[in-house]
Length: 251
Image (spheres, rainbow, N blue to C red):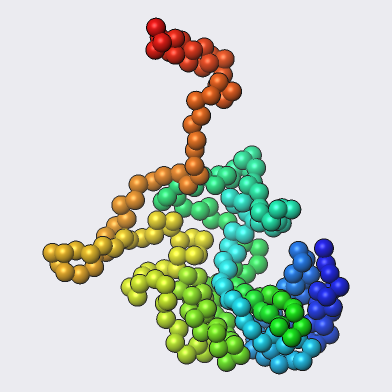
């Protein structure tokens, strides 16, 4: 349900930025604005400095890979009433969450651009929250401007998005990995990154250093499977067989 306050925020964004924003959406009790990369700094600065907006706090910044959004594993185009997405129908050929370690995701072309940086903002003065999203123009070499000059807290957030998604932030003062090892290959939150990774590391006491080796994790199903020995879950033949086995045990 859209409140009057959120509706007013959406109207203010459209009035202030006119053609600077690609879209403003009010849904699920939230306001999301999308901006082109070339207008990001101008829009971000105005969001912070405009008295009618005053989004002076960047709460969070994250990367997103939309390469298979809403097409495999889970329905993500719409949320359920409880806020959780529902598993897709197996008739469509999806795996219902039963990807195994080592499996590759299907190569599914995404409609639109792949990588985006998402900024979560809060205005303490007006008690408003909003989300700002910017897509990288090039999927093979995703680059968006840094907002560290607008919100200094973006420094480590942008490093995290770079580390996990490979999104480059032009103008960042120190764009280095922040969670993975310096010698790590790839970006683990990309949809095409293997679930088990490429290598594993351990300390070798003989060599006196950390060594990298091929992954040795055994494939396993990600969804728990519970075996219930209960007649309600057995066919008639299985129930009769189970009854005979139990009778022999008690004989």
